[in-house]
Length: 534
Image 1 (cartoon, rainbow, N blue to C red):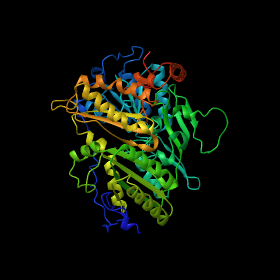
Image 2: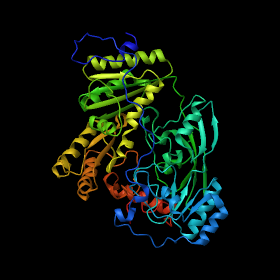
Image 3: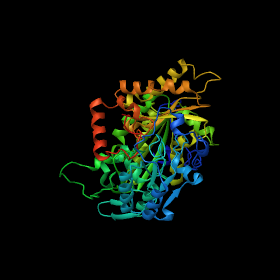
């Protein structure tokens, strides 16, 4: 059977051996508007300290003076900073969802590592608190000030330093936008090993500082494996040049690992050396409709056997997530019918005929074995982007809701969707979901089945203190009881630092605090976040 004849599959209502002639172009959703959306206008967002009472400014930190500003001008120049201009500062003070907002009066935009070093040296001497900021696409408030910290924006450090076309090793400034790097590498037959929905805005330095996971961790692994070296400026201005391009270096402690996922609390990443894979010659994307999460698991289990070396992504979402996507767009139906669960499968390889055959056989088996009910396959690059736009469009759709409670957790795959179901029932029992006047609109999940990462989303028609009181600590306790992590890839920031004990033991937390004290004894770098308050 040809690839074209397998694009549209028969449902299980058909006889076991029945096959149908199908169109070569699947009916799929149009590309979702890629414009960034906000749950709250940035100028209307409440200050973090007002929304989350209990934070007290550390009086050891100096308040910014005009003399300080003049000194910074001597480092970055008149055009290298924004000072005391609320309209220009608001985008740096507020996260993109409008949930966290600080009160910084100064943004610095260095263009070299030496400038970052000079800035940090001065801030450490003067005890001026600093918040490193990349693309500001985070979801836990880690990249915006809490009080009046100086914002150190890396957006001006966006140069590619070098690329070895034999080994595929890229060296670049930390402020390079992920998608720009991927496009640049694409012209040379390579790609970035990480891919995110925010790729058009996020910086590679921020990706590394938060140890972002993304859509293809299943294929390329985590940044702990692909990052070969880093250039980091410590809180006292010391430049640590560890821009190694070696795959093997067994000499001493692997210090770069300390900064991957440290969220800018012990150093500012200014340069990266990263291993990039070859860009696949043949890429296929398929979408399956399924009736249960058990079927999702079975589809994943079989994909690892039947697709093995060409499997590059395995994403899932539930029917409620799709309804949220459709609510804020005018899409055509993806399939003839709607299903409780959907799976997006991507394969990447070097031989199109070989990959097409493997995927065709796998998808046919999914239908014949009654694991999946229906399926579509993208026939060209445009349709591939269209199918991916569904998976990547949920966050933007949620941004149009009056309020949304977003959580990113890691759970053993068999328990992944039970988390959604238990939260749904918990909120219903708590009286905030399931009635006409309930604040909670829905509870749904999507995420990366391949690495057990669930994005739990709870859109609401209004902010209600009862909702957050019911979600936390219930969710963190549930995750802990199931040997999960309260943060799979979004980090801790200000949203989860107080809940760290649900995932890390007291001894481990004390070791982290000792590390912070060693590198940043004055505590000036990204304060009030990441670790539980003293």
